[in-house]
Length: 82
Image (cartoon, rainbow, N blue to C red; front, top):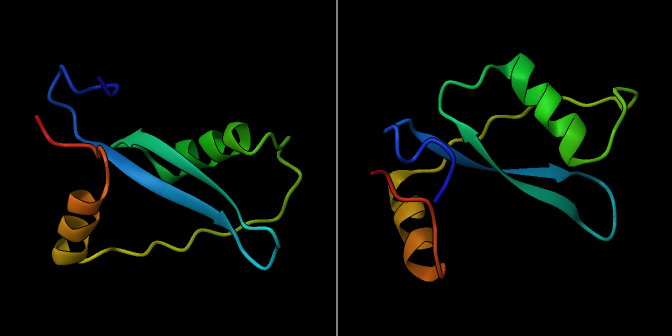
């Protein structure tokens, strides 16, 4: 069970990608829907094993509802809202 699922809290699945690097380095993150950008910064530091010394920026890309449905149907298991 994902964190927050029992309390009805929305959980978002994010994909964090390091650009312009080969091989591709990325992390899948499950965060609460009310997570602030400041908290997301802290989560990324831990997820990538950083010590707050790497330059980074946030690009927030919103998927369309249809692309989310396609991804959910092709995945073995994705987050579902309670």
